[in-house]
Amino acid sequence: MSEIKKQNDDAIMEKIRKDLLHHLPTRPLAFKLWVGFLLTIIGVALWGYVIQFNEGLAVTGMRDYVSWGLYIASFVFFVAVALVGMLLSAVVGLLKQKWITPLSRIAEMIALAFVMMAGIIIVVDMGRPERLLNVFIYGRFQSPIVWDITVVQVYILISFLLLFLPMLPDLGIIRNHMKNDLPKWQWKLYNILSLGWVGTPGQYKIMHSTIRVLLILIVPVALGIHTVTSWLSAMTLRAGWDSTIFGPYYVTGAFVAGTGAVAVATYFIRRAYHLEEYITDYHFDKLGQLMVLVSLVYLYFNLNEFWVPAYKMKTADAHHIHTLFSLDGEYGVMFYLTQLFGLILPIIFGLFKRFRKPFPMMIIGVSLVVGAWFKRVIIIIPTLIHAYLPIQNVPESFHEYNPTGLEITVTLGVIAVAVLIVTILAKLFPVVPLWEIAEEKGVDIERNL
Image (cartoon, rainbow, N blue to C red):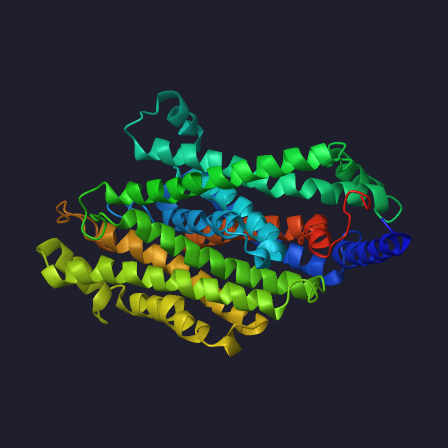
């Protein structure tokens, strides 16, 4: 290697380190206020959960008929958002789409945080959470709940590995170049997590091979986690759930929610850490195109899911369809607003390049994420209200579902925990992979470790 090439590589690498690692030692006021805001929500939610734990699920809006409420709707939402790690890192990454490089780690952070909260919200929904262990001891293979818990655990493990393993070269760079810039505890953390990485060709070969295996493995696991989640509903004979397309319906809906979440997180991380040179308008344009693609597929499944039973209008389905399609139905307004802002308008705006810019994409992403959460509410609750079981001679409150303030507070607290995890991960670790960016710029990364 010529001396000029070495000097050029050193200069490029120094700039990359400065640009992508400058936020690690700092704790700006805005970050502290944001974390404080999230911790406040979490603290209030913990107080609410203590009340629920002591007094039982009667403090929520759930009753004998609507036994699933915001908690299970949020569980399906968390699992949906978590699938973005598979979509971006595995599907798009294995297709050799280089534009995904600056976004893949953000996607994996979101995937890990939200799939962890999917497990937590299940415990929150249990009146006797100490009995969770019985699922592992006495669970039967015939139970979809056992399948769900199994794939959630496997997905958490693979998501962690896909976040951690590609970060090893970056951790080695931080260990070697930032010892004097970081607090002692923080440098020790990176030193331990780097696992003695020195950047030999053998280490890179093992890392690339392992990551490729994980990227292939996470595809069936990710499809399995949301397919099995859909089977929790689809394997019953309730109107609105008795569907053979719930598997792909849930999976494509998950891609839409996850893409929206990445758009929102990427926008704020890009602004907070001044990453405009590495996460450009081009990346938001590509993300917007992907969003339109998955949204169109999801729109197709929505048409199948509602048009077919609406055309046949069997008795039980007719009650369910009226609840959603009629403006005077219990969930009519929510249904139309969700379809409009959570799917149709994002597709329309996403078709135009002027809206595939950072700020418009953030707004579209918020619309997709909020719409995705309300969509899960629509999937879960109206079906339970129209049960096949007789509903005469029961308290009036059993005929409808109105979440209590405590239930809403606890739900917001779990969402805040997921956002807090993403916030902390993005603050403690480089959100854009240094070594991959350096490789794309032709830098000899092994020499510049």
